[in-house]
Length: 185
Image (cartoon, rainbow, N blue to C red; front, side):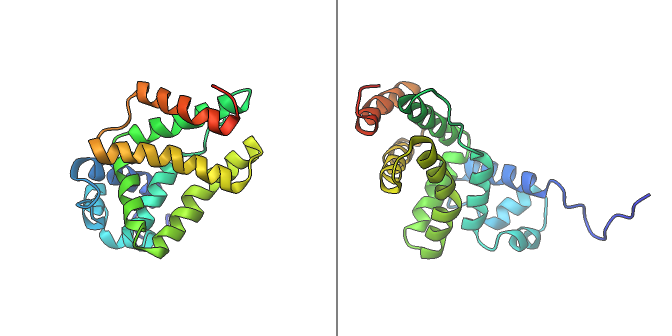
């Protein structure tokens, strides 16, 4: 028999907090989803949350990383890879709480250089690097691709409160691909 370390069991805390984060953001909106409310929804002490995530922004970024997971780069050619990336991010942003959390932390980062750095290095860079390697494109073109696609999707969420409909995602893909692939989709 092995001795359990003192204190409460720690396994699964991240999963519980991330689920509570998305649920709280979905129910209350980003601004009202405080770390204290998220901790209460997760059924854990707020000190437990603050020990792992010193700020709401850091918690949201980790939650988004968990929600997004690795980018599935599927397809035989550049157009198929880029199309699958657009549809993947649109689907992720459409998940309950994810688009709200993404738009909220993105908005907070405008006036918070430390949060901007976290978003850039922890959230954007892994996807940028994966796309650069898959597409053989320079950093500035991949960043522009990300800006156009994610910016458009978040703008739609902000203006309507709803994720982009599938038909509009198809139209977005048809508009973006010729610029980045040099040919129609």
